[in-house]
Amino acid sequence: MSQVVSRTLSDRFADRTNVFGSSIWTDILTHKEKHTDPVYFGDGAPAPEMLPIRRLAQSNAHVWEDATGALAYGDQQGWLPLREWIATNLQNRSIDATAANIMTTAGSTQALDFAARVFLQPGDAVIAENPTFLGAIDIFHTYEAEVIGVECDADGMLMDKLEETILNTPNAKVIYTIPTFQNPAGTNMPLERRQRLVELAREHNLAIFEDDPYGDLQYSGEVIPPLRALDDQVIYFGTFSKVIAPGLRVGYVVAPTEVAVKLLATREVADVNNDRITMRTVYHTIQDDFLTGHIEECRDFYRSRRDAMLAALEREMPEGVSWSRPDGGFFVWITLPDHITSEQIFDVAAEYGVVAFPGKWFDPQKQHAHSIRLSFSTVPEDRIALGIERLGAAIRSVM
Image 1 (cartoon, one colour):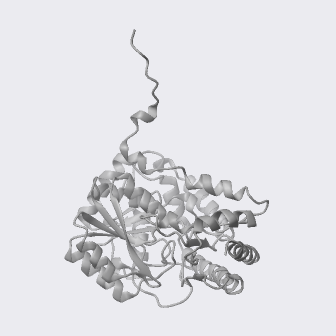
Image 2 (cartoon, rainbow, N blue to C red):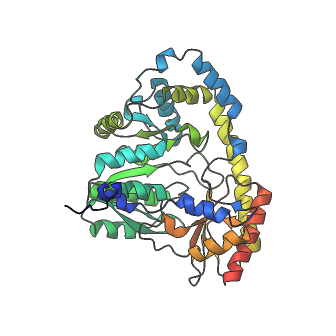
Image 3 (cartoon, rainbow, N blue to C red):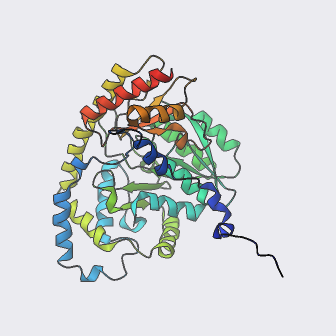
């Protein structure tokens, strides 16, 4: 009689799933439960007060009045009027684009996933800022690519380090960057570095993935054109998540023709087409200069919260702690003294009643052991002051 071997379906998992550990959201929930009234600095999302709910409801009702044509398959590349609007609006960022080389997606994260699927195969390498967007790291690892981080300073990726990394990485295919109000560090790459990045990519035939969720949310400083404005070979990702609402899942990718063809084929395999009702809802919401005025209100609103956080950090942080001073976006990057790790602070701060993201989560090499990302976008100013006071006390207790 043969022996029965105990097995589970996990024995059949693809090897690429080994890149995933437990969800960070499990850790976040656990830490929130350590205090009865935690201040949460984790959301990279619009404030509830800035969601244009009434406008969205009116637009959605208008769409449903004539929705029959939108309830079948179709609009695989995205609803044409929305793509035409995006192309026209991008001219304000000095980007020349047409509806033909724009595809709408379920948020810019899906666009990034599609692009990774088109370009990457096991053993390839992606060069990225260190730190970088944690979701991008997961996407690239899913396609069994190596993610190599490049050292950054207060102005973003260092070009001499980028060049050195390219020369030492013969399997590199892609440079992934968030040059404008970067997530998580909040940096804004100067024009000279952007020009050099484009030169290096062309010299070594590397694709550039430019992720630009926060470009419209500038509160101070010089306006710098996106990489896509410098080179029409750049693959550019945009979204309505940060200026309208992330739950709608409407983003887009702008790509050269040969790439756009592959992206469309990839989308048809993945989900056939976007939610056609939602695309139309977004289109009608942004009409008649509504989005222009709404973005101006967002800038004033978030500028005030950024300033409140920076002022609180000046008051409450002990000597030896430093932080970024972003001109836009949602994030402030905290750097702790070398003898204190962000994971220590993650645990202790939760007991003091404040929760933020440890820097290691944004590091492809998991070496950012002394940094913390704070988001100010969803936290009222009085709560920002309270949370930073608690964080300062937590850091002092560890010091």
